[in-house]
Image (tube, rainbow, N blue to C red; front, side, top):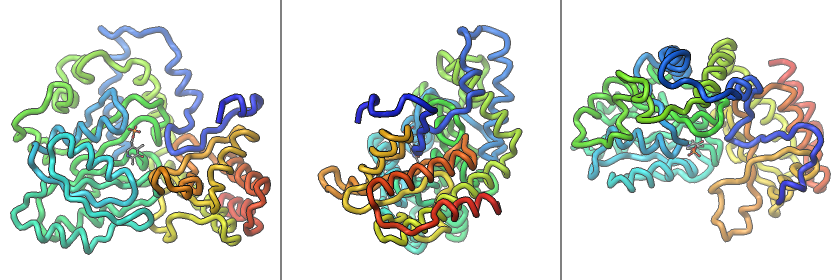
Length: 402
Ligand SMILES: *Cc1c(COP(=O)(O)O)cnc(C)c1O
């Protein structure tokens, strides 16, 4: 599809699971001449910035900033804690856990993958069996994707902590919160997470290009025992720099920092609890509409149990390859871009065109969600898709009642 098929009038809406919609205030904060990197405002703002980042992750511990995307902090987390030849356990629901495992393999780390498919959450019994079998404690970390963005499954991270504690297993608990942070509740310290990673371009509402690794003292101790960590990936000077450049191991991502400052101001002005409950209500409104559409047996939600559905993204299927047709229609006619299906079918499988996703991360409110759902309703009408009646009313009722 070419961009000239997108309507030119009205504001385009990118309703995909990252990059997310950015607030105008964030864009405006970035729109400035190159700032002084030797002294002044930019340097002075760093302690407050890292403190406010830690408040988003709900941690009192350390944060390192990288000029990177999510894949970069996957590598950063591993490079600081797991030596070549050591083992990690990877409970996988959907695609992203496999991506993190691939990164580990590239670093010479042994991966033990438990694959739970594309529509079920972690099976805690199977994870327990794997940990119990590891009597020699060869598993040094569990790589836990909190929200898998391909399937829209949200896994139960506190239950994993409880399991590690119950079995007295010393592995680090590492969480990928790239999709979830700032959307689904995540509390690093209270949940006993040792390392958490996220990026700027989803719930944090800043362009892609900066990413964050949060780590506690247990993870820092593992870092101290590593035979070597490259100067670039080493999180220690980044988290505790003597000089400004050490935050980034080089030139600062100057404009991103101003955007992030503004985004964190907005998040904390609203309050983390309010941010999470806003995402919950908006997600429940989206599910309400999807459940009505599903009555026609053409539209299916990927995750049947609401307890395991993320508040950040919803993965759907529309039969006969019409997921792609719907995406094309709403993009070409309404200026609304929906997420492509990701990792749900093999590239040569015609069913891959069934899958699509609704992104609902970050800078989002009720009228945007109603507009997006209205756009999908129009697209389903245009394609003559059989569906239940009253999807928008069902969504409006959720938003109306909170
Ligand atoms: C987006 C995402 C990633 C990858 O992030 P990139 O910035 O695309 O490298 C990894 N894990 C999850 C859960 C994600 O949502």
